[in-house]
Structures are given as structure tokens and as C-alpha cells.
Image: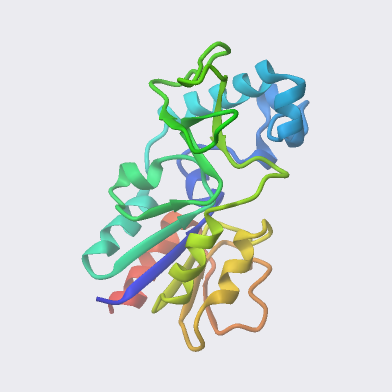
Length: 227
């Protein structure tokens, strides 16, 4: 069974109604993302950061996976699929995908603010001040904030390097280090890019572009892969 690696971004979840940081809008439009998604923000206004992620978590619980999520899950019938996602939602999991690596964290989990290795599931949508780990420290969202390292990238590199096929879906390839993963493909590896535009960072690689949204593009991808 061939190995298929998928790099997914916010475009795939946007079709489920989840907004990205860049178009957050609403009550958050007055804030720069670094004011609610950085270690400095956590130190400066913990209550604001918790509210920000509570709102995102609440929206996630009201969203459902779309056809692109389900289409990727269905590919596990023909391929050994590894999904490397920049998204912090759990829509890939809820669609049935079984091998998922979250580069930037998971919205429905919390971690100890003093020991990031201590991770907890969040029951419901709210994480409050006073919610503590067993060591007595405040729980924070399990999110890789701006200015923090992306430890999961070390696990992502071999998944891309060993893949027989790479699919890039719903990402502009502007956010590093995730965008640099395409450079770790082995020579001759077919790359399929599903995006209405043409993401930067591909360079002169041999790429098949599917210039459609994620839900439309997954249909064409399956035709190309399965014949």
C-alpha cells in the first residue's frame, strides 16, 4: 500500500464555517493576533486569551467535517494516509481519519502552563481561570503560539520524505516551518496541490495543480489517484 502524506491548512476547515486568524472578524477584529496568541499575550492578559480560544472552541463544536475531510478519510481504503495539519480543530478526526499529526496544537486540549508535556482533554468549550493541572498551575490552550517552537515538525519531516505521494490542500504555504515541508519530498514524488489560487513556496517542483476549493478539489484528486 502506497504512502500518501497530506499537508492541510485552514482552507479545508473554512468550508466548514471556521474562520482563520487572518479573517477572524466579529468581536475579535480589534485585536492583532499576537495580542491573543503569543506567550506575551498570556502573561499580559490571560483572561482575554482564554476568552479568545473559548470562542473558537465553541464555534468548532458547532461545526461539522465537510466533503474534503471525509474524502481524505476515505483514501485510507487505498493508501496509508498520514495527515499533517496546520489546523487546531478536530474535523479530520471526526471525519474518520486515523493518522493525524497536529503541527500547531489542538483546540480541544489544554496543557499545564509550567509543564507543556502534561496534556488534558477539555470537556465542552470553556477553559477558565482557576482550571489547574495536578501541580496547581493554570491550564492554557494546547496551541503553539507565535514565538514558540513547533516540536511536531520533527515528526512531520520523515512522513513527507517517505511518502510516495504528497497532497497539499487548503494552505497558502506562507507559514513556516510548515511551508518548508514540501522541500523534504524525495526526488520524483508526485505532488498535488488543491487550492483556488497557486500557493507560494512550490517553486519549480513538478506539481499537479487542482485550482478548486477543498471540497471540489478532493473529487478531482480521487479521480487522478484512483483512475
